[in-house]
Image (tube, rainbow, N blue to C red):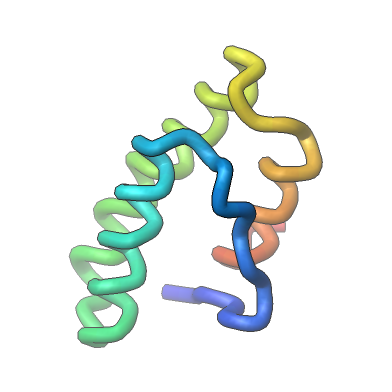
Length: 71
């Protein structure tokens, strides 16, 4: 479970991603490692799908993965 709180994600990300990141933050704040990790697996796939569909940029993809310790 990792979340670099110094990295602020853009506010104009797709609504679905914003909801996912809000839920991830709730699990992070609660210290719920299991739920965070389970949800993040789905979020990671979703982020990649948004990128492949052209709904987020390469820079946004990299920023998201850097925030959550993937990059």
